[in-house]
Length: 263
Length: 243
Image (tube, rainbow over all chains, first blue to last red; front, side, top):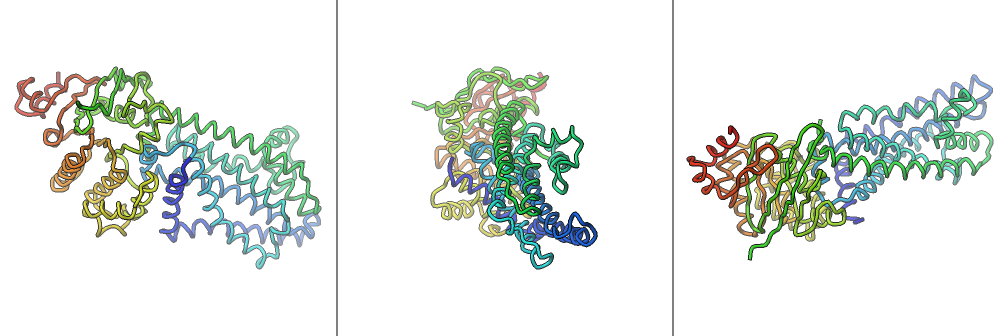
């Protein structure tokens, strides 16, 4: 893998963001709205529910963690869709870029894009609602890492679909996370789900991540087995998604879609 | 002795219900401009796609400088020395001309990129537009930016798919003259797929006629004209297509 080629692909997207104030605004706008909305909902629950007493940060923290996951996945998809929308797709595949370089460049650029949106929202949490994610301590980094891996995994799977089936797969890019959110137990414990759904939910790393977040925030207990389970599952899914991306690329070459992907 | 730079052996591409390319064989000598002519859907773009490694052949192989493009290790090395223009692909519209050239210059690992971009923009009369967004340019200006991008790596092999389609005669002539000078000055190999017969007659040393995925005739423009007893290449094209 060559750094200059990966940097060039990242640079293309950084120029795009840098050159458009509405794009920067769009990146920051939604996470901030999420924080404000969930912040007020959390305050309301704190005042009117015993369960949430003294736990104002739980819902708000889970909302920001979920938004980080959402942004990671959408950012990855967006970077790929931008190439299709701008009809630049073929230019990339006739450049001396390796598939591994494309994946690495998109993965790192998606992180930068996500951070541009999420950092202002995190900074707003403390002055507006008196909640700081940093109170979760070092495990917070591992939770973010897990969410980033899972977001990238979903991004890889959706872009594999775009490669293989073309822009018709675009709607899936937007809906993929909404399908998984109920099973991820973002705002409620796993025990709320019916037993048969719990079995499916346990196959997702999200359950372990959000159970762990609640464990730290409510009980002040760090359960490393949850963190380990999430990371192991994530690694398995991430590697599988990379393999699927390679298979989709080979399928696209066979089908001839790399030369005429467009709107 | 003339050196073969592109060798296409028994190349075949079968899509679901259609045979796009049917057992294609040809060699291209280094430093020549070869025209690839044929009606829409005859397999020109599929052939170019396989030469660029964008489409996997059903069977057969494409060798560039003796290396099979299907070999993943060769692919990046080969693509560093090739480039492609088509009216059906564009550069990111929201990036400025200069930004687009910087991105692709880095992607191709070009040394002295600033100087290279300046020279290309000067040669192609793009200096006045360097800070303009590519999407804001006229189609003639965009075409010159695409040409600059295709020349950023000083390619040994340039594949041109209808490079002057939808351009007005003045800009079309400018592009043709530029390609002509570029090829003669630097001894580059060019494969030109076009529907503009006068363009092909003017630029190409040799012409390959494709129909139904096969090369059905080839030779210099003048030899094809006299062989088929027609006045010009356009009439030869019409005769072959309608037969």
